[in-house]
Length: 263
Ligand code: PEP
Ligand code: MN
Image (cartoon, rainbow, N blue to C red; front, side, top):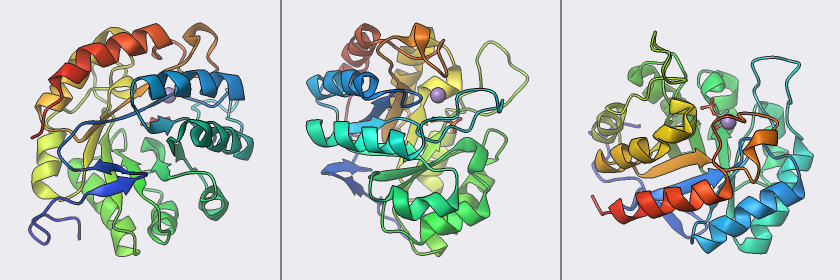
């Protein structure tokens, strides 16, 4: 079902009027984790000023250590919804537990399935049974074929609104947090009809690489860029080192946006 052989035309996903897969570059920006109303609002305000509409933020955080900040849960989703409604933005947020999905639909416009859950088949099937777009991230050790099969789980369960997101894979290289598999973009665009995004924050883990990797992703045909923005990254409760502050975010948009073109 994901195969372009079966459906030659691009799937275009409408998220509150933003048409993902239409050939333009769409930006999904926001903090790693929702920490407070003020924190999310500050990011959302600057996004609005940049003309962006897709607000991300984790309310349920899949942390490596159980002692790290786990997210605000539904309270975090409420904050996202409130801020998004104030600025007329769409909410993109990760859900970890299939049992939370139904309730989360009241707050989110796009359900994110994170790298660590790419092969959580119960979650994939549950996301396949709802009528909301799903942003599916590539597992950190998943092959492109496994990634496509994960999307197949969602679509075969009844939901064809799937956005794929390359977010870097684990290799021996330590200069970056993960290794951005940039060629996954044209491969996925060729093999499937689904929109393909690139998360430059989690793939590189380095603020100094966000602009060049975003430019590379756009040049190679991505449908969208995801990156993390926090009003004060130094005190962020997660991914403190890799989030842009508002000034860096504005510089990022200035540098990346002129390269925007229709593929
Ligand atoms: C995220 O986008 O918030 C996230 C946790 O990313 P990933 O699942 O790619 O690690
Ligand atoms: Mn993060």
